[in-house]
Length: 264
Image (tube, rainbow, N blue to C red):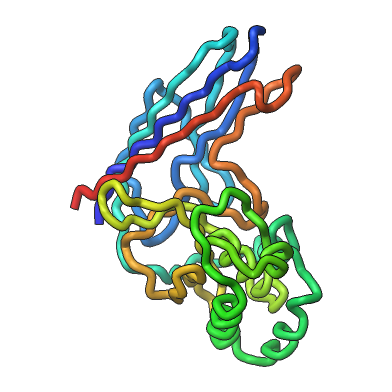
């Protein structure tokens, strides 16, 4: 499939003072084998920088942001996706260690130890299947939650959306010594109905495979998945981050809208 993706970002200075030297990052896409970015157009023109884990960002720079001023930015991407959701990308030794660590939202909690111990001796591909079954048996799917709970809290509430399903799965796989990382993006249903979505990648038998526990899909994901940001070294990388000094963080209001259309 080929999609046109339009991100519209609006920043507003909500105070009555000048803010200077604002820097920020605005996530555009992440490099994955099933997805090819054909074209990126950004207005006004901004530098694109490439960070770790294949993530690409537009660099936001505002020298002077006047009181109550608003700035608007638009990024348009043409993205082609396909069904090949298995990657031969090699895993660096240093990166492997990072993908096994406990992080915020991927807590290693006692409630999981009985299950983890029960499947530890299984082959890795079986561990993936059994973990997916466990997560889907424990957690009730809810949509449009406003808070990301993480593995620890979701084992208390026993309900969550795609964030909680992916976070709990990553926590379990890392404790099973299977490298895992999160992908944030979108799932396309039809024009005007594209949902923000999260799923994960796991490194098994020398390959990265895709897992969508919220939709109960293993490996055989389809071309309707659009990846925007990969999270593995850190669990809480933001799609939009704005940095400045001398003011409280909420002084700048951040609004973003996303429109996705299928070209073919």
